[in-house]
Image (cartoon, rainbow, N blue to C red; front, side, top):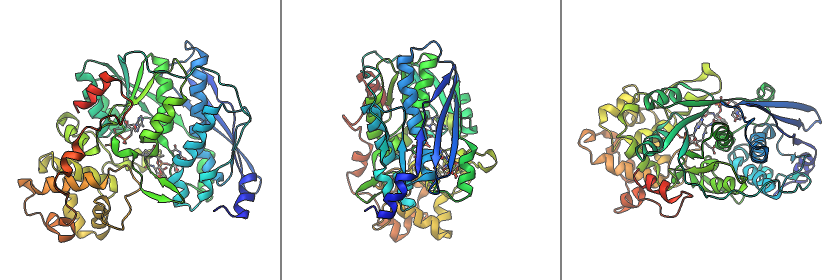
Length: 451
Ligand SMILES: CC(=O)N[C@H]1[C@@H](OP(=O)(O)OP(=O)(O)OC[C@H]2O[C@@H](n3ccc(=O)[nH]c3=O)[C@H](O)[C@@H]2O)O[C@H](CO)[C@@H](O)[C@@H]1O[C@H](C)C(=O)N[C@@H](C)C(=O)N[C@@H](CCC(=O)O)C(=O)O
Ligand SMILES: Nc1ncnc2c1ncn2[C@@H]1O[C@H](COP(=O)(O)OP(=O)(O)OP(=O)(O)O)[C@@H](O)[C@H]1O
């Protein structure tokens, strides 16, 4: 329910998205924010691609660039929320739907955490624009595949699956982080890095207390990846977003809030439907498999074990704030649990700097509760982080409990933990290939099936 006061605020405050500009490899995304007191703030976000787009048809580049401008606008819009998003240059029907959905679902966690349900109904003020391009159709056979690398386990599984199947693979990242560079070194494949820089005015507003929170960062990375693929001549961008990403955290004001929404199948379909003819294929290779199945395959990719990092604290924008495997966050707990059935105990503990996160949970009530959240103890909410479903955590728990190197571990023997074991038959279901729940071509489907 939106109150009259909220309604008045959101009609005056908000963000204006201006037409993005492109100069070779350099993109500028321009916005103007209007505060609730009427103050105007200008923002320019820059993206430097690893190759120029000069040689690519503008009829293909421009629609992708405009989608990037809309997805990236949310970082700035949130500082003025609730409010209106206006696009004075106009929106096509497809762009309007894209913007409405990325705002409603991509800012779902932000709305929930800041108690701003009005964000779900953000008004979009833009004249209608005529479609500028034919829609994209999935025709050509994938050959040259750009794999976005996040420095964690999922992209490693995709890289090796595609390479083993004989595809020409290139790696891509938005900004550079130690685990991403190390992954590329182990893979011995070229890493193409785009440099994305948020406008520092945003951090000033955040420091002054503007509303802040999670944004659908994978939506932005996806569009930068597509533009990079266009610049460098890749026909496919293959993300490593898993089946589990499509499941939300909590229902709130009639909307399913999902931290990982732009990693989910709904977003994948939305973006595919918004692309122009001539754009590269956008797909997630690991869509038909769960995190647990990915973990099982990653456990066999031992060359990457010393270098990968899934902990989000390794990926802060400010270098001084970065750490490797903190061992204390939901993501660390989740990866520890999911790899535990598939790796020798000593090797798993070595990944985490010699730490046993199960044992540590016995000494820290919050970490213990964190495992119960992952395991879906009744009444608890799945953490607002990139973690899998309670079902797969329960299967991991049951499998690790059977392993001799964990026999007699006191955490695994806790009655509250034992009560959260999987039911018979769950392992088979969790590890099964999800038939039809993906957008893969038949040949890429074969690659995914082998994961
Ligand atoms: C690294 C991380 O987890 N960051 C999240 C954290 O932000 P924090 O302040 O601790 O650090 P920074 O990331 O350095 O951000 C500084 C400020 O900049 C804002 N910001 C950042 C990127 C952006 O694109 N737009 C921005 O406005 C940010 O709000 C900070 O004020 O907490 C934030 C609030 O919850 C999160 O939004 C930060 O998440 C990053 C955007 C991020 O890159 N997160 C990924 C590791 C992540 O969560 N990936 C998800 C994918 C979800 C999706 O749908 O795309 C996942 O793997 O599940
Ligand atoms: N900075 C980045 N640049 C390019 N792609 C990225 C970046 N960060 C994440 N990704 C990609 O976005 C998707 C989601 O990221 P996610 O963190 O879930 O995967 P991951 O890092 O491969 O594995 P893990 O689940 O172990 O963290 C993956 O395809 C990942 O490769």
